[in-house]
Amino acid sequence: MNKKLPAYTVAQIEVTDPVGYQKYIEGATHAVQSAGGLFIVRGGRSFVLSGVPPKRIAIVQWQSFEQAQACYVSEAYKQLIPLRDMSSNFRAFIVEGAPI
View 1: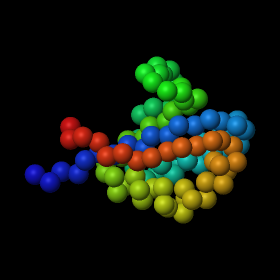
View 2: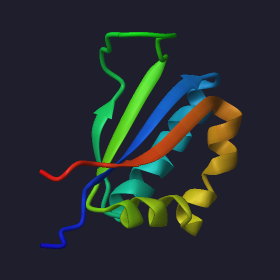
View 3: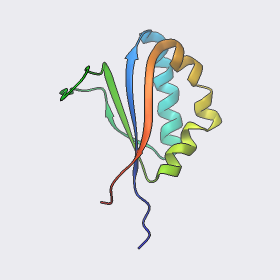
């Protein structure tokens, strides 16, 4: 059985300009959902086990690693990067999940 594994985008965000970041969120929501991503965490409470606590967390679930990569290299998402970078300190990565 050669089943594709799910993937997840994990983002740690420190918002520096709430108005600008809200505009980014609106565009990113559309880009991610149009590409098949599902936001499973968006802010909310967290409990730090070790290290510096994040300001804000977002996690997007994807059907595959390739689907996640395609979203973030798409023109729709690339157009949002300057707005994201001007309104936040943003760190994100894609991880492949375990078989379910």
